[in-house]
Length: 293
Image (cartoon, rainbow, N blue to C red; front, side):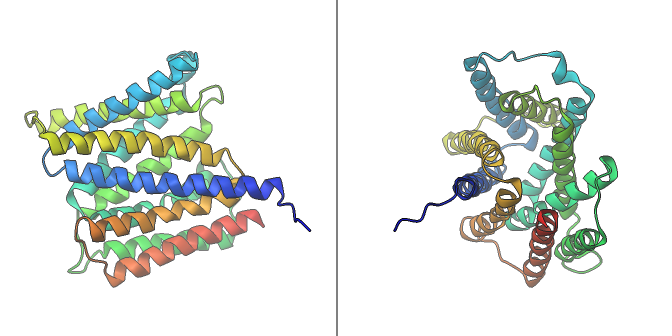
């Protein structure tokens, strides 16, 4: 006797696989960016990466017959989104360049917690005391990883925190963006924001342009390809299956990022990172479970 699997469960499985693939590709993108930062200035990396991604999404939009500019792309939510995108990308790339990949990835996992916090404060969504407690526990996990006031503290870890806040703000602004804006157009203007971040930081830093060698050019190309693919997989995942079933697999980026940091860059995993990341992931999963109940 053959047992039929419910279509909803199949959709959730497919969405989960797309999410895992997306997180793996985002981790690969981070590794390529970190490798390129050993040779190129941060501003130049942001500029080239943003320009490449914007060109790809512009091409996708035109193939689909979509207009690259409408009045909706300059709406208030989209302008706010651009500001947070610039902030998130700039500071997270700085974190990738100046701190271990594994620690930057771990801190980034607090983004869903900050999104829930922002949704309660900005969109007035109801958040019970159980979820407030989970948010506090998750943020305590970030503090444990950063270790302020101890010998293990690095002020550079603040870059990852600022990047995480920027990404959370971007996600909240995306939710408020007009529904008429497609995924390709969101991707286009998201990557154009990275171009702006690169220009602003290059002007502030005042360093000359560096001609990349073959290896560094390959790193940049790999970052663009994996970044665009990761973004596309993420959008497919969020539109396949139930959000509550798919979203928890965002935390697989933690595993991919730590693994690449240990294997590729020879980083070490501290007990503080293990404990802190455990609190962050547990808090995020708890919030998702409570939201489903």
